[in-house]
Image (cartoon, rainbow, N blue to C red; front, top):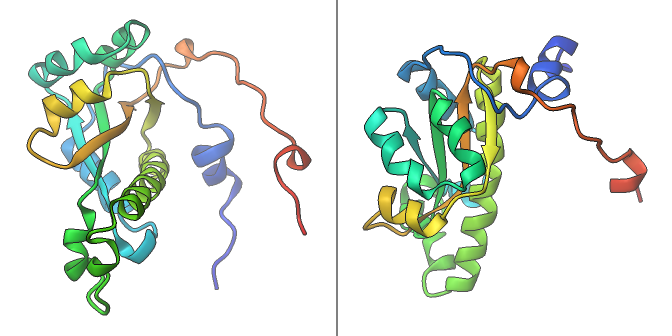
Length: 196
């Protein structure tokens, strides 16, 4: 039987976690980035399709490639972040289903059905992006997920020659609380949910 997580863990993942805009000058190790991926990949996806593809932009050279494709308001915080993850989605994910879902011919469900495949790719890739944020927080990293970039240009720069397309960016590191804005309001339960 599973037990509820303790308050400190829930605070780290949800209640006290914030979207960071300023960063401490502390390195994020490659070991830590691998831990994030190894956790995030364990979350469920339809037919284990796992369409998320991630590029960690960490080197000065890679940051220089990303910079011109950012909206002006996102440049400073992204260049200051130790790492920026490009969360992408592989729209040919179904080619890997013989490996990932070997007990059924799941590839045939998507082959030749682009609309169905694209919807599954986007839904499950976005779901994995959420897992990614929780995984990063669980290993002690702060996150700054965002849109506000030229998707087509980022795809050409980092996913050329593939059918992977960027979904969103997520700055990673150890946040500087001085750069936080006041927390925005959230809906009350009855404003967003119902039990029927």
